[in-house]
Length: 277
Image (spheres, rainbow, N blue to C red):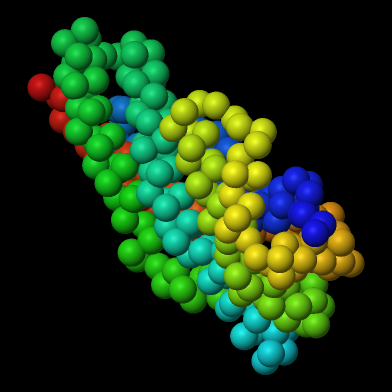
């Protein structure tokens, strides 16, 4: 029997996983560019706010509202891809990175402030570990202040129709709800975890799991990869994933900026107290 080629399987995995790899890389671009005025009562503000960065990226073009059947299919798609869970996980994992960026920025400003005595500078820097932990803690709970389920639904209804017709969305959902897709994702996760644990990439890893797939499931994977929709999904995947990431970023960046500003106000207040002693 004709077995799914590696490229077919990798195409499926790219579609499901590429977005979250972009999320991990995106944190490198989430920089808080700040101007810190320790004296004079001025408070820090991110002068390159995330909201501005994402709003510049987010296209204003709107696709047609998906029909009732397509909306049901979109729910199947986002559930099969665990998008809500993975976005929550990304918020949690990115929180410390964002807090560390803020900490380094503040540390650089404090070290460069000529107004501070050596003793004042030492006291200011001593505040940073607990302050950074508090920032990270607040960022990790960001998703609790949002209706993430509604946000994911809005994303699906907004982004997917830009790339696919209602019929294609329904067809895609049928494949995502199949045992062939579920097993492909499960095996892919196992292989990645094994690679992470051992640090070794096994070229024959997929062959070792062939017995998990039935003949019908192998045929379904092959048929999807060779279909017009499968080829289209592979072609538009990078743009689709970029728009998903940008949508979530635009919806959450204002909250991230507000958390950053609140904690910077607290830090500036403590700095002002140190300087008057």
